[in-house]
Picture (cartoon, helix red, strand yellow):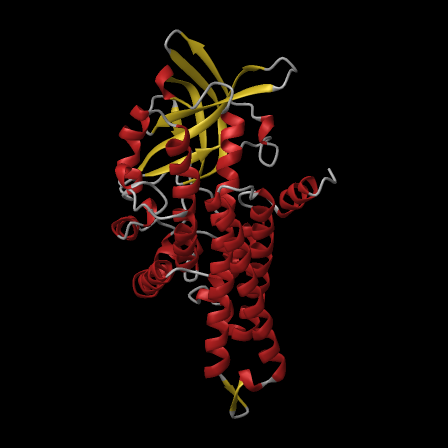
Length: 380
């Protein structure tokens, strides 16, 4: 059950999405550019600062409120939905949760205001689902660390307002031989830190995604984020939290597809009647509604457990699994209901169709979610 304040927030962000985001979505999707001016407006609404204390420039709300905002934006555009989700869950959270007072004072004000974005440098060619296989290294030399390696598929890493990326690197070996991972803050423009060309993606055209390379990148010891050797555990916590907001993104996509399909079923006439009067189409819409509703209930369950401070790992994986599959199925059915017009890129349904596939891959593949659930059940 949502509070009156949360309902008001959701309605406000939905209006913003419908009135500001939706009319321009096709244009910036075609240009494959992040609309920085819309990001600034999202910042003015306080969306990037929702779950953070007022003392750092946040809104003092909870994680449910953030997820509601992500869902509302993702109804009309997943690219901006993931920009918000990753900007908070993967960009801000590591600095807020593990940063020193100096790091928080330096980076959080602009990040929480939407004036800046941060990337989350974890994934590598050989270390995606297996984050422990990280090959990037950081070697200490006096009061500096020298970072070498590369990262892939890093969101919000090359925008005009990207201020930093957080990077995991191997800083030694544990007694059992496993790599010791430590996290570092690398400001944009640091010598040796290069952002590669943006990926040519099937979908999420507006979302900023780049490969990164680090060649003898020197950062001061004070750039360490959290304790040495705690990078892996800290990033896993951030991924668990981010997975909940990602599930809300999925639910928003599923809901957006349902809304588009329902509108089409009511307005398009065949043989003199709206196609929604056809029992088969009506049944499709019923299933679409059920999927979107289930996806929302799943992420809300996980988010409420997160807020309550009780274990939520299994619920987060369930929500991500249910939401991503709901979005994929609804995108397929919405395209079918729209027919030929659903195959035109200018149509929001076509964009959802292209975008939805990555929902089964990003922030932990479907197989990773099943693996997590198996472990939580004591089966692996």
